[in-house]
Length: 455
Ligand SMILES: Cc1ncc(COP(=O)(O)O)c(C=O)c1O
Image (cartoon, rainbow, N blue to C red; front, side):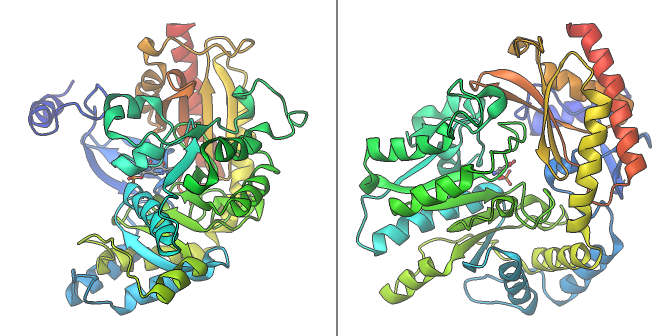
């Protein structure tokens, strides 16, 4: 370990502790350029995780930097409660244009967790304003992740992130994940008759629909399910059930929004309109923090009719520099056809990923869509038996991949919340086919080394 890293660890140990995982990072980031990050020694890493799932137009884009600087020369902050500016107005207008047609109102904030807190609260106040204050529960799924704050964590079905805080959380009901590789109902598609979707109606009936405010789900899963893609019938059934029981459908697009899966939003693959949609990560491509909750016009109308304001907001919401970053990123995405590129390249990405990795005995499943891929690592491919969680296989995979110069994103818990290792990859949309090949070659080598240690 270099002296600089050792010194950095001493300092980091003092100021951060080891709160995020049990290991301190082994690299100090010097700069980023395109699809690459560079460390303190000038070593280059392909940012094959894109952040995770944040970097869309690549690192170090001069156009974004210049637009942000021009905005800073005018003004860097105003309180959104009293002020708007042109970039914020243009951004809201732009987002609404690309969103599902029923979504007409934007509420900005600073992180995915905040966007989901906002969604939970706006859904509840909508029911309150309509005279149904009993409708408070948010039903969600196991093997899901919606954020670290207490409301979002209550809706999250990621056991490892919940367990230590269980007493602080709302004990809202959860249904099984629509994950065919590990079907929670031990059934197989299509003979299952989409049991995982009808589970929502069962639970609504059991707890009583008069108590249910919303159903929250990631259109395509992220960290907790290793990029699970529900079958085509799933969301149309969910939509029908929500409508029947006056339950709002909150679509978490924190990862999938703004092109990651080859469409503006993941839910478009099912042609279903949610009542509330949240997004963050790729929205500014990582150039500034920003997130958004986008709301059906019918919800806004209820607030207007009642003369009620939404009792919610954050001091830093709608920051004008973040708004400018976001607008510039959206310009680049549109002008350079990066959503179409994400769809087109996504085909290549999955074909090459499967060709280069699926022969490994530790690769149980490769799933996802567009430029979002989850690789599930197993001890035994025939029985799908996961590795012992104490071995921290996914974390080790990340270490080995980084030594080879490739960044992914290690996660755990897909098997009943406590077992299961997965490795997510989601590169910037500007990545080339040859860079995809190089990154998968590195992961191929990394898996060979990993298997020498664990199989
Ligand atoms: C699907 C999903 N929802 C919500 C969040 C929370 O977002 P943030 O970390 O910006 O609070 C994440 C973060 O990874 C996520 O993947």
